[in-house]
Length: 483
Image (tube, rainbow, N blue to C red; front, side):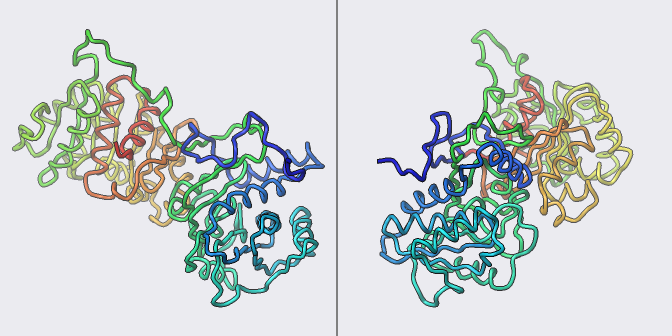
């Protein structure tokens, strides 16, 4: 018999729960956007409760995650709607036969209306509220409902102590919507954060789950839309890049084809002691399908790559002067007078231009070069790591990491360029205000030469005719894929 308290999910909606990686380019919504979605839904459905649905979904997932120790579940309930979701989950877990300890310091008289009803429902069903986590008690599961979206302060005091205690517990931890202490918009930590094994997020995905500290603290992600139709959600500027779309794929090659159809990529860099960077970029471009690749290495003693003899070499000035189909400048470039002059010439090229590494450092140090880059009429693509982004914007690295999405969008607008801000959850921003957060990749990419390979991959896709923004997204995703 169907549970009368829990509305069935419409057939058009995502079933409970779904792994975000199963979705293609799901939208990302900020805390402010989510509050507006909640407000509009409540206005249209005054008799229904999204909190009841969220708590039911949490209890259903929690029942599959709890260890088989027979120990009770610990529910941490905060002073807002996130705490209300947790209280509904606690009531439903009790109905399933679980023993549950609810710990909360919330004042029921100051709770939002839905959370106050959840509190009353828990107490009316015989539930008690503990003022602190019982010492030395073992638990089968922790449900984190302390703080959800839009946390505006660092967690401190007793709340921080509870998070610290929960992190030390040897049992699964399920966060509701976002782990407490994780900024849902930026992915940065507000003082301390719960390190969840699983996060069940509601209605839509949040950008902070995918970038900065989000991937380390959210654990395995699950999405429940709580019965909302995806078609009813507003448009969002951001997406999670979970899979490649058709726009990220090149058409199949005809059998009757030749290398001239697949682009000539020129890569400028490789000063004395840093030739390897240029070689890595060139090899990656060939592996990604470029028809031909010419390296303009500043260290002109290097005239052949014995590991990849298909690479051609040219005097750098000649290479940038004759404008191949795509130019990439930066891997191992250095920042001397010759490098400056080469970048100045490259900025005039009537072809797509990929700028990385020292090319970005030269832009940061020269207002004239920066202005020339911003005025280009052909596509420009920038691939900075946080340190390079900090130099480009003349801010600290901490400022960059505090809001990676905002940083990438700012760089994109300032340079009229497609920008990939590298790091955990690389953010790809476009001049029209759209952005994507990549979900492939991992710490294995944190080594010298990784960015050089990405430069070559981007250039190769551009050379084969892919649109600039799509090429950058595709290259970033492929770069992080294990295959």
